[in-house]
Image 1 (cartoon, rainbow, N blue to C red):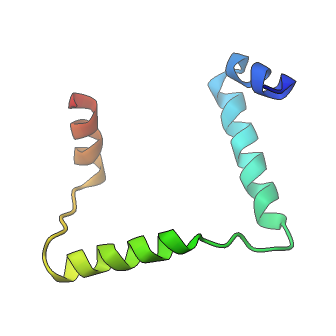
Image 2 (cartoon, rainbow, N blue to C red; image 1 turned 30 degrees about the vertical axis):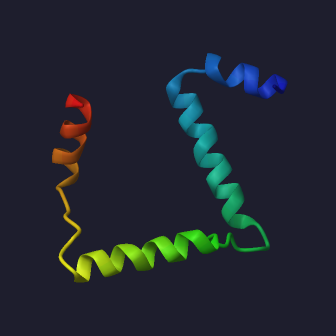
Length: 71
């Protein structure tokens, strides 16, 4: 574990969020775009197929969060 990894858990949440925002912004500035892995494309295709077959259902985000909290 690096020194940075040891210090991050000690930071306040708002500071952690600030670092996350900085890292995402920095990643987007990179010369090479971030490529999705092959498995991600395959999973999206499988999900689309389940949607077309009526085997996939969706839930309002607030309802989903509440269901997760109750689980």
